Image (cartoon, rainbow, N blue to C red; front, side):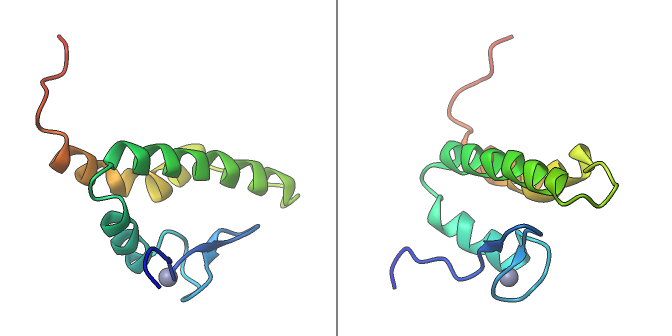
Length: 95
Ligand SMILES: [Zn+2]
């Protein structure tokens, strides 16, 4: 189906529903990149909201461990930076 993503996360562990790898798996990244190719900022906002939800879900798991904000950020959002850069070359950042 058009627009349907197969590799989506499962709560509360945020592993991939299709392949069981930590989300977003490589297939999920490819799907998201394709889905958001014309709107990389929307992708960034979506991933950032996923990251917040993930931290919240992890905090509720009562594992006795504090979720690693930096590591989970790199995992959920960090991979998309080249996608953002690749399509955001029109304007120069303000100095
Ligand atoms: Zn997957």
